[in-house]
Image (cartoon, rainbow, N blue to C red):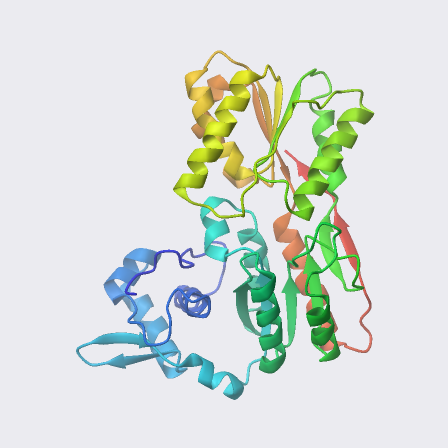
Length: 380
């Protein structure tokens, strides 16, 4: 598998860590996430330098350390290959802090800043002190359970988890989380707090999202809410609060919401299908304001405004960030949209707070207490 397609491949320009260290860390992420498997030949130094937009000297230095640490091995005349890195787990002197999420880091990083900002904020705090390992359950309870079981065997220092929950907001792998805590491994949940577990968590105020939005759409009669899924607990909660806030303000929400069910799989086929639904929705309604569930929907509706340049509409996106706003305005075209604004759920701060709680629990296990932090979304 001599390529990097699908793997983590973005350097953080705001990170003060040397470039070769950043490259090294991302290559390890690719190996652990299975983009390169044991025995695979990795890309050449030239291709890696192009991929990461760095010099071959930087790549050479990163590879030399990975070979020395037995992540890779080189064969003269053949190339560089992935070593049996799992065999050396028990020999590691540096303890690991892990992040377990339903998302693949590379996937969310490609589509938006959501969650990649969380990953980067955790990485900045732990690097140099702990080994940082990212795992993805890919929305599979079985895979999440397997990863949690392996964490106990690996004697990790602690773990930040975006947990899988059922429709009642209960952890689907309740017993596995208990096994982790009984093994003396601290956990901090992010984005969700399963009601059947008393564990520290950092999330954001979901209802406040729509209260903030309504303040900026209070003079509008027809408000639409466009989401690409309501089958998960967090999406159901958003839809619930959307209806509550709109109804409390005297606004009707009938026929103003699209439910689109799919299983968090991003592909060209899925994107085309979402786009068709979004276009149909906008053509069949006379909404004055549109709340986009996340960045993916915001990208999808851009084609509509290219074809309907006379329509004026206020759009507010959820999960978006200031640094992406100019890109959105460029995509939509400022002339086609009256306003385009965003609600930031502060994913970077969620990662930061969760990591601070986790490290405190690791350093002071007898003094740590359960903390539940609920951040207020920011409007811009």
